Image (tube, rainbow, N blue to C red; front, side, top):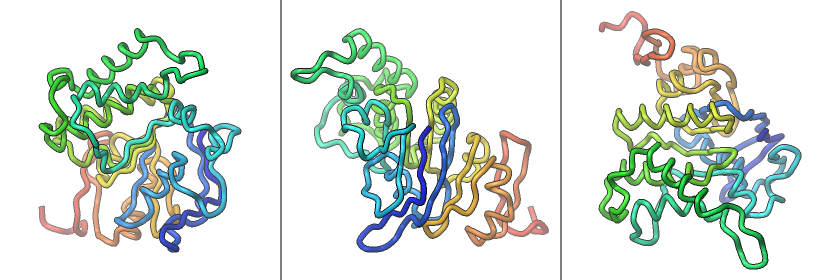
Length: 262
């Protein structure tokens, strides 16, 4: 269980998350949605223990996330930022394999995973992100979407208990958006907790099991997608008239009033 209680996060003296309390369960794909600047990325980074908090607490089980040693925390939480920059022009396979670093031994400590386990995890992540054909290509020669897939492959290779991803669908074409969404649902089905920041409300409606809506640093809706992303919530938070079309699992969000011409 990953939880936050009365969480307050400040950046440059400005409060970006205010009094946020939530409990995230493993085995569930949760989407965090909200307008630009609402505090989504700050909330996600704070949950991962990567952003200092002004007050409140973030806990993983019965342990404070801030108190968990970095290497152990990296084995438990896999984090994908919005901009997954790569400092060296390494191959895709090497980038994905970096996800295994938290599992490797360090001087004075026993090995945490065998080479066989590392190889198996990297191969599985490469396959999940359809990266096999790009394995030996330098990262500098990848498109934006290919880089995004490789970065997610690194997270998956780490086999974390929790996957926290900030807009992982943003740079992907429709086919790979669908594939990644299916992969994240599979990871949740294996018992991992999956928390994803999404701007695409239709993707959140169709793929997430739970949606948290944040506005001006406050959680204003939290529940099943049909409730958290109801027309009333969207019109109040995003301030646009809209309506949902289609059946459950394949809904589309139409902008404009219900009597608008189609």
